[in-house]
Length: 192
Ligand SMILES: CC(C)(COP(=O)(O)OP(=O)(O)OC[C@H]1O[C@@H](n2cnc3c(N)ncnc32)[C@H](O)[C@@H]1OP(=O)(O)O)[C@@H](O)C(=O)NCCC(=O)NCCS
Image (cartoon, rainbow, N blue to C red; front, side, top):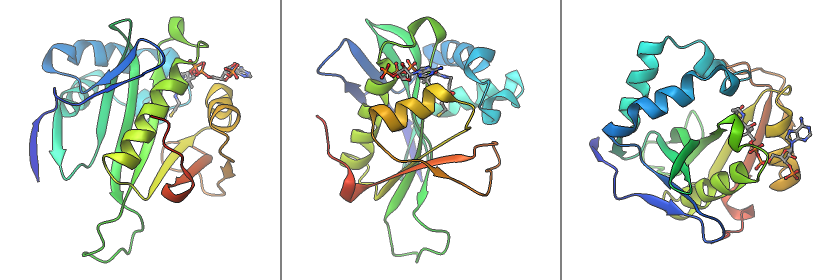
């Protein structure tokens, strides 16, 4: 697996002054501040249970773009100001028993928007850019979004704004998520 700095990867909204870019080493403290803000991890055990020094290691890892990708996370900027994070925390085979020569891939997507920037449609636009990127550039077969059923904003975002129906999972995942949205490549309409 190769790794390099991802500074050339930028996703730009054509509708609003919103852009997503791979964090650089200069962004590590900004990313850590977003991840360690308790208001951002109320429903996300993957972050809230992680000690601060590990958050820095995570942020540092995100500055490196691996090929083939195993994750790809972006810093979200609105009017050039960092307001959150969006991307794929996990990228891997579509099924556990997938044949080694079957290169079809799935990605687990997520988004965090800092509290002052919420409720303005910015999470929708950021996640839409991430979905488009996953299907167009990373050629995913499937994108999954997991969340906790107490997370009403995320639920509304996925169901009302993206129009994706929830699967209530009988098995809660290791991060406490009991909701799963699955978007198939064949069902997704690229927006940009
Ligand atoms: C989930 C999150 C990204 C949503 O951000 P946002 O900026 O509010 O999202 P948007 O404005 O694009 O859309 C949210 C939608 O949910 C609605 N909504 C938000 N809170 C709601 C509530 N308590 N009840 C009903 N609807 C609600 C909004 O009105 C909006 O829909 P609308 O535009 O049709 O009115 C944000 O709350 C967040 O960062 N939370 C912490 C991190 C997290 O839990 N991320 C999800 C895990 S992947």
